[in-house]
Length: 73
Image (cartoon, rainbow, N blue to C red; front, top):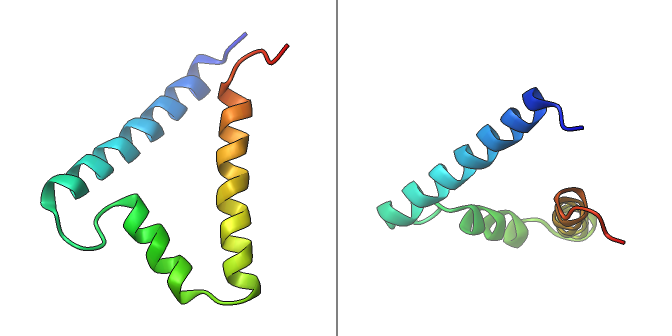
């Protein structure tokens, strides 16, 4: 059974991120989108920090797929 409070918080966070992304795309200024910020960090990190940044990002995306993907039977 889903907890309505946690579902509401996840929805609010998702809507917040989408809103920020749409504002960034509309403004068309450098560094305003999630992808531009990710690439900025990726270019400036080196060695283990860059590797860790990429692994953390990939892990978060895979976790999201498994977490919200439903029943994987």
